Image 1: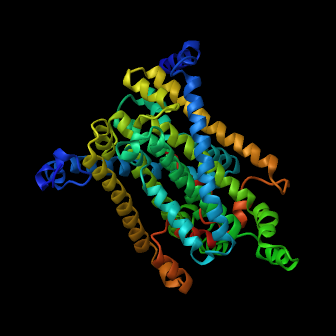
Image 2 (image 1 turned 180 degrees about the horizontal axis):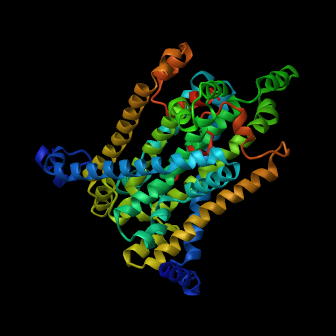
Image 3 (image 1 turned 180 degrees about the vertical axis):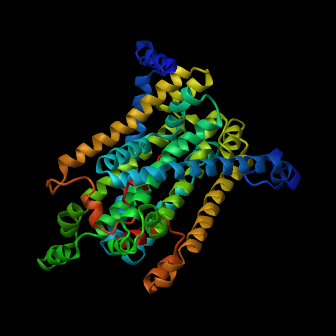
Length: 251
Length: 247
C-alpha cells in the first residue's frame, strides 16, 4: 500500500498502470485489431446493403415506407437482445456480432443516403439528363457526388456507434476490447478495464477523424463554396451533426 | 426453427414467470429502474435545455447540446457500466446502473428540448412578449407547446435508450430483464437466451409505441399531421430518428 513503485502497480490494482501496458501489450494489440476488423467489416457490409436499399426506397414510395420503418424498428432493439436474438441463427461466432452491427448501421446509412439523394438539386439532375446522361451515369457522376456529404455524415455516425456497440459482443466472446473489459470485471482488474475503455473511445474518435478527412478529400467543392459561417462552424467542432445539418440545409 | 419453438416453450412455462428471479420480478426491476432514471434525466436535462434555449446560453447552447450528444455516442455504455461497477461507486448497490442510465438519458432529452425551444417560431415568441407575457408565461404557454413534438421525440429516444442500457446492466451484475439473457448464456440455455431477447426487444418496442400514443393524445396542437412534419420544418440539429442510439 505504501508508495507503490512502477513494478507493483499491478499488485496494488491501480487504475493506471504502466506495467500493465508493457506486459500485456500483445493482448491489447490483438483486441484492438479484432475490434477494428469487426467494426470495419460490419460497416463495409452495411454500406453494400444500404445503398441498393436506399435506391429502392427512392424509386418506390411503398418500399420507402417499408424499409424505413423496418430499419427503425430494428434500431429500437437493445444490443444485448439483438445479439441474443441472432444466437439461434449464427451460434456463438463473430458473424453474430457483425450481423447485429450491420442491422444497426442500416437505419443510419439508408436514411442518410436517401436524404443525400433527395437533396440533389433538380436543376443539376435535369441538366445532366439534357446532356444525354443515362440513369446509371447520372447516379454515379452527378447524384452520388452531390449526396456525398450526407452519406459521409451517416457513415461517421454509424461507425462511431458501431465501435461502441462492438464491446457488447463480449457476451459471445467476440467483442474486441469489450472482451478485456468483460474478463476484467469479475476480478476487479482496474487497469485492464480502464485501458480497454479508453482505447475504445480513442478508436471511435480516430475513426471519426479519418472519415472526416476522407470526406474533405472527396468533396473539395464544399470547402470552396463555404462562407464564413460554415467555415467557422466546421472549424469549431468535431461535429457529425453539424455536417449532417449542413447537408440538410441544402435540401 | 427449433430454437424458436424452444423459446416459445420457455416463455409459456408459468414457472419461469413467478417467484424470485422470475420474469415478472425482472420486468418490475427493469421498469422501476428505467422510470426512475428517465425522471432523473428529465429533471437534469429539461431545465438546462429551457435555460439554454430560452436565451440564457443561446450563443453557446447549440454547440453544447451537439457536443454532448456526440460525446454520448462515442462512449461505450458497457465500458462505463463496468467502470462504475468496479469503482467505489459499485459498493452502493444499484448506484452504478442509475448513474450510467442517467448519463445516457440526458443527451437526447437535452438536445431535442433545446432545439425545440430555440427553434420555436421567433415571430410568435416576439408577439407573445409584445402582449406583455412574463418569461414564465412565455415558456409555459408559448415555447413549450411549440417545442412539444421535439421534446417528446427526446423523451421517446431517451426512454428506449434507458430500456436498452438497463438490460446491459445485467452484464455488470445489475438486475432487470437482461438478467434472463445473461443467465441463459451462463447455463448454455439457448431457448432462455432467445426468450429473454424477445422480452427485452418487445419491451423496447412497447415503450416506444406507448410514448408515441401518449404524445398523440396530449399534443397541445392536436392537428392531424404525419410523424415527420415537425422535424422537417425546423433546421433540426440532432432530432431525426437516425440520431437515436441503442445500447
